[in-house]
Each structure stands twice: as structure tokens, then as C-alpha cells.
Image 1: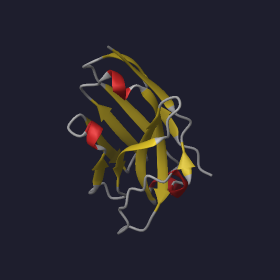
Image 2: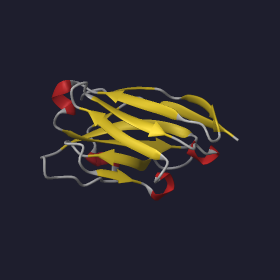
Image 3: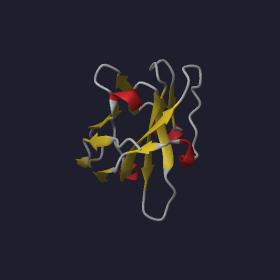
Length: 128
């Protein structure tokens, strides 16, 4: 199971910005739709954003539309999550996930079992 490596979490004031990054082994990254989930204590891990293998299709949860942007650099095997206008309710552990797909499969499952590869998680804390 390929391990994804996340970075970029931290503490930020409400209204501020953070950028998360997630790097995967090239063999995994090039074949995968990528996504970011987040989880708070006592709650289920939820899908926040996703991006297709080509980068042409993206998905955003309603709660982050207009504030978060997902992108990927296939030359660096890295996916990014730019988070702007952060709110206290964005505080969570953010997880990177990869789902190997065919090029035409751009479905962003919320079912965690659909994603074979996960990062260890990075804490994002937004102070109000």
C-alpha cells in the first residue's frame, strides 16, 4: 500500500490561508484520482475536495466552495489544497487519499473504502 506524504498543516487565524501538499509515489500518483478528506473528533471522515487524474475535473464540498482550491502537478506527483478565508469550523485533521482509476472514471466517492492509499493526516487549526 503506497504511503502518501502530507505537509503544510498548522495554526492560522480565522480569515487566513494555508496550503497543504501531498506527494505520492509516481506509480500511484499517475494512475490515481486524488482527494482530501477531513475529520474532527467524534465525527466521520468527510470528503472535502477531489481532482481527477488529468486535473480537468474537480469536486468541492458545499462548505468549502469558493474558498478552497485543489490542484495537482503531475510532474511532481503532488496534489495541493489551497485554503483561503479559513473558518474555525475548518479545524480538523486533513487526510490525502488516492483512488486508482481509469481515465474516464471521475467519480468522487465519499466511501473511504474506495480509496486504497492514505496519508497519515495533518492537523489544521483555525483560531477564531
